[in-house]
Length: 335
Picture 1 (tube, rainbow, N blue to C red):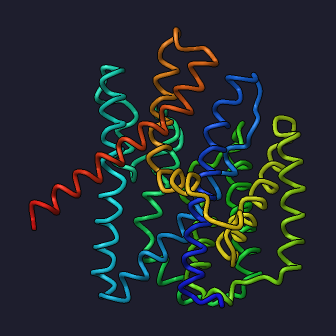
Picture 2: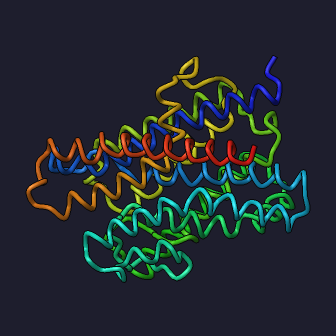
């Protein structure tokens, strides 16, 4: 019997595995041009999926706090937990970049003050633009929680609405500002993904289920478009890449979040561990990417694999281990 508690465990397992895969997608998006001299993986699709997952996790976290306290207290505790998790690594990244560049007023200072960041401000740790948008969405989460709770839409409308909203904002952005690359580095351009994740979290599990036949149809469509994107990634015009990539990200994320069984039949321990370290790996990957770009003597495919793939995992694991030891020591002193 698949009880709500069991479904929560399954969803947690699936999210960890999915995040591990998405993080590797972003890493290999950066590694591909270095190793093969051409784009290999559409990294933005992974970023979009991360926004859906983030909306789901944050809505659940806020809902749990809201059950135990008032909306104001829940908001305060939610913000404190996000600051505690996000800012230590942001500060480490900023200090490291500042020491290397010998400039403590470099563009990465905007990662510490995300609400004054604009898309055209260059960052040294280039991957942090997504995190800045995450923090902006965190700030809106208590309000979005009230909105999503007040609007009751059927599941197909959630999917279609998120897809159309995301396409419309990005298409408007491209048509008005004529971007030469397919990126809308703004909070509004990614709000549709985040809202979909929140909406799924705040619906009962059974309410979100597709029939097995419906899932098969969506999966066939998604895999077909994904295969097309991977083959013709650097040949497609902006708009086909936009709608196809958004479609794949939304459908894959939706199926992962509502699937009633583990993705690979059972929990894959190593993938789950990587998934739990996604944020840490992501920040360290961007930091090592910056270091790689700074030193010409490192511009070698073998160095790239070590710096951009292996070292971020090692650094993230070490950082998390030290953090846990620090927390354990704090608890021991209190006791």
